[in-house]
Each structure stands twice: as C-alpha cells, then as structure tokens.
Amino acid sequence: MISSSDLKRGVLLDMDGAPWEVLDATYQTPSARGASTITKIKIRNLKTGQVLSKSYRGGEMLATADCEKRPCQFLYRQDDEYVFMDQQSYDQFTLTSDALGSAAGFLTEGLEVRSMLYNDQVMTVELPLVVELTVTETAPVVKSSTVQAQPKPATVETGIQIMVPPYLEAGERIRVDTRDGRFIERAKG
Image 1: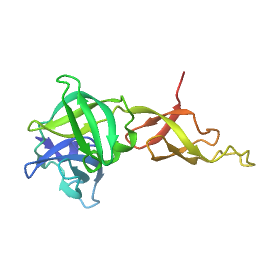
Image 2: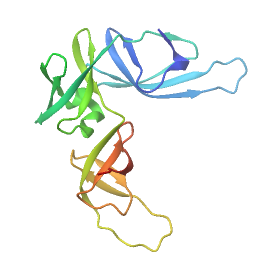
Image 3: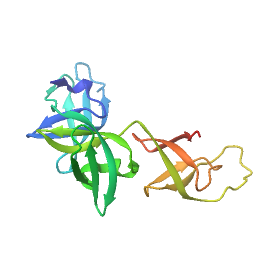
Image 4: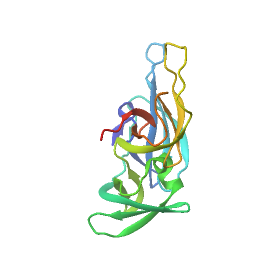
C-alpha cells in the first residue's frame, strides 16, 4: 500500500486486477483552510496501454502492484513487435509497441533492459535512464546572429525526434534521457 501523497513517476499500482504505471503526478493544495491536498495522476495500464487521469485526496491509500523485474536484452524489431531475450532463462518474448509505450523509441539492438512481470507474464520493459543513439537526420549547422543558441529537431536511428543543440550533425552519437527524451550530451569515444 502507498499513500496518494507519495505517488511519483514509475510507481506501479494494482487497480481492478491489472498493473498500472504512474506516468505523471502533480499535487494541488487548495487555499481553503482544512482542505486536503489533491493528487492528480496520469496512469497507463501495462496490459492494454490505456491511459487515464485520476485524482485522489491526500492520505488515500492505494494498492501497489507486485511486479518482478528481470534483466533482459532487446534483440530486434519485426513490424509492430519487439523481440527480447530473458538473460536468466534465455527464453525469448515479444511485446507490441502499445505495451512498450514511449519506451519503443529508445530501443536499439543489444540494449540491456529489465522486464516487468506481473503474475508471471511480461507486461513491459524498464529502460536505463540514459541511452546512446545516433543522429540520422538534422538541419545543417547554420551560423546565426543570435547570442542564444536555439535547439533544432533531429531524427535518431530509432525514428523519434529529439531537440538537439545547433552544432550537432547527422552521424553523431548522443546521450538521451529516456524519461523525457531530452538531449544530455555527445557520447564519448
């Protein structure tokens, strides 16, 4: 059990017999005296991919999902399915892009992730906080007259778009935060 005031991104809840992942949590404190804090969350069903918004009063208790996490490796993508291998049992399993959600945009062959099992069934995977990706397409470097450098969109090898500094060119390796898709730095080496 977890208090609604302790909810944060990544927490797994058990609602209606299914695991739900908290995508976002915000807190509002009403100005009226005696009113309790309201927690607003955005959650995603790990079985169906459905996204909902819910509100709870401060101090409400919610059931947490009992999920097992195992190391696994992303092998390859085939159409809308992503194939992984459990590194303990060497069994292969597939997940759809709906089950993966935004994580699908950060998967490169050989990437080591953790699978989340609920009732011995793989629901989704947990990415490392930072991944390295190759920029495949971006606007050319332009020397501008502005003092402040403006970020530009870049497409990476997995097909997603990320805002990068103007000095980056196609073919460069970059490090990206998987929580929000934010550019961190050029990859070293």
